[in-house]
Amino acid sequence: MSTTDSPRAPAGRGLRASRSDGAEARQRLLLCALSLFAQKGFAKTSTREIAQAAGANIAAISYYFGDKAGLYAACFNEPLCGDANDLAALQDATDLPAREALRLFLLAYVQPLKQGEIMRQCTRLHLREMLEPTSQWAKEVERDIKGPHGVLVNVLSRHLGVAPDDDVHRLAFAITGLALQLFVTHDFIDVIRPSLVHDAAAIDRWADRLVRYAHALLDDEVQRRAASAQAAAFASPGTPPAASPKPSRRRASSP
Image (cartoon, rainbow, N blue to C red; front, side):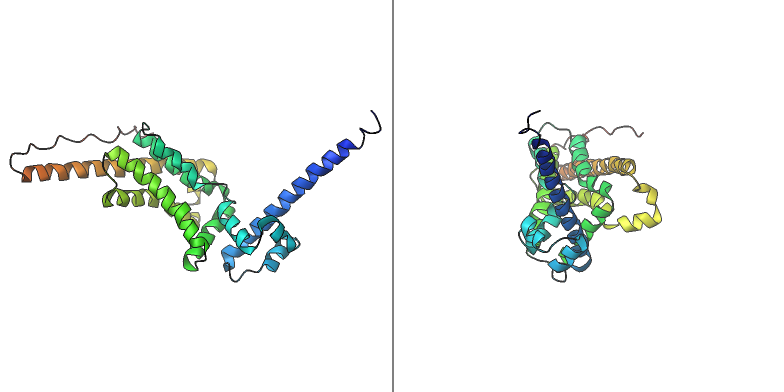
């Protein structure tokens, strides 16, 4: 080995270690900020307090996140490693059966539950933002609420064969509510029946049940619309009654 080659390996290791240390320092700041923002809100949490909790220099916040607002925004976007835009692909999958579309939607929705305490803090952060809104609120509504809701409305409209009317939106809110209540009532579930959410397998089982519940709601809406059309046909002289509806997809047998 030449004398010029020998220093390179330590330098490479040092660079990788430096990058790793930087990523870890950034993550510590992010998680400490998430905890404090969830407890106290944006206005009552200082950057000095965050830096102290993370064991970092206060200048590190500016270095990694720009400013306090940038760090606050990162707390909404990064800890759960999810992106509501991932659901957009469901809008283009026009040949996807209703049950599979609902499965993909609900599975993506409940995946963050597997991250335990980080998920709890993110839920508290979102609830606090609802009660004490900042400029972040409008972004959250657009990305994390309107975005997924619009995807589900389009999926339901496609399988019902109708334009998105009030009843389609009502159905979408009902289906989303099935998954949303797992986040809002997680602490209660832990007290009453902790086995329902105690590990990833339990959450996957609950996701499977949610798909069944959601599909039952969709089938009921198919039946309701068919009954309404039939009643309207009987009320109009000379108009033949509507054909009996078919469910959106045959129910799978219970396990």
